[in-house]
Image (cartoon, helix red, strand yellow):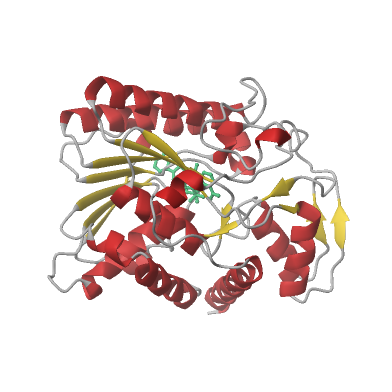
Amino acid sequence: MSGGLEIIRRDLAEIAARAGEDLERLDGKRVLVTGGAGFLMSYLVDVLAARSEASERNDAPRVVVVDDFTTAGRDRLSHLASHRRVDLRERDASTLELTESFDIIVHGASIASPVMYRRMPLRTLEVNALGAWALLRSAQERPPEAFVLLSTSEIYGDPDPTHVPTPETYPGLVSPTGPRACYDESKRFAETLALTYFRTYGTPVRIVRPFNVYGPGLRHDDGRVVPSLVDDAQNGRDLVLHSDGRPRRSFCYVTDFIVSLLRVIAGGVDGEAYNVGDDREEISMRELADRVRAVAQAAGRVVVRTSADPDYLTDNPQRRCPDLAKLRALGGSMPCVALEDGLTRYARWLAAERDARRGKRES
Ligand SMILES: NC(=O)c1ccc[n+]([C@@H]2O[C@H](COP(=O)([O-])OP(=O)(O)OC[C@H]3O[C@@H](n4cnc5c(N)ncnc54)[C@H](O)[C@@H]3O)[C@@H](O)[C@H]2O)c1
């Protein structure tokens, strides 16, 4: 059990309360989650596993988790190792062939941190493109009720400012050859593939495009901006920005994301893509660093330093904010966790994890 699990458990209770009916609709279903040990999908797995205690009819979902631990730690789901309704399988999702049927398939396996996917570009292309293809082929033979593809807001590239907030209809401004292309373009390919299966075979595909989700489960060394800044702040270092601080993003706390993901799983329309994120604020990286500093009561200054990675800023989007009209039209609970609240929860989790790691080393 990881040190911060109590903080995650409170988040799970919040998700269950807000997504009640959508979760109930998954009772009795067999669910496959690829990338299930990662940041976002482990929350989904945990929420489904917790239904065992909450489901009155004793028919909580059965969950098969596939992950090869390319980027995930092994401890995140260790508390579910002997859970009677969760089956954890160490497999490569790029070459997965399903020999059994599922009611719901969620393809979340990927290498989502820009630092990590630039280190492993071919593995990123494989899991995003070939993994999606392998699963869609299997789904054609054994059709599920819903096939949910985790895509990304990165498919919009660096959007023209007149298209921010960005609706799902925006085609994107993306480089097919730059250092981020292994991620962006393979996600775009996966979307094309998924919709082609929908149009050709009627595969019930729904696409989710997450916008900068953060929260417990994001490891301190993940390389994304929120964990990096919070880790700097908690270790008494200066808070380092590798851009000039002007790029803007809208950050979404993980509970808000999972509630919306469950809405799309339970009530989304086949053949449609949905932006999922938080549209209430679009803030600069400089402002984010200042807020992290305040939340962590950090002594360090906010400084700009050139990244050791020469490609760090190449094709880096200047703005990112979702248009959520389509998600809103599905009904259900919309984002409500304020950035300060989310950062506080994440900072507590990261501190608890650090204490647990220290405890292990000393014992
Ligand atoms: N967190 C975000 O803000 C965000 C934004 C946009 C898109 N997404 C997408 O959402 C999904 C989940 O993102 P996340 O932030 O939880 O990422 P994550 O990196 O924490 O999780 C991805 C998981 O996939 C696993 N994985 C990678 N390659 C694999 C393979 N070949 N076979 C099996 N497992 C493999 C990793 O070990 C990890 O557990 C991803 O598809 C990602 O692209 C996330």
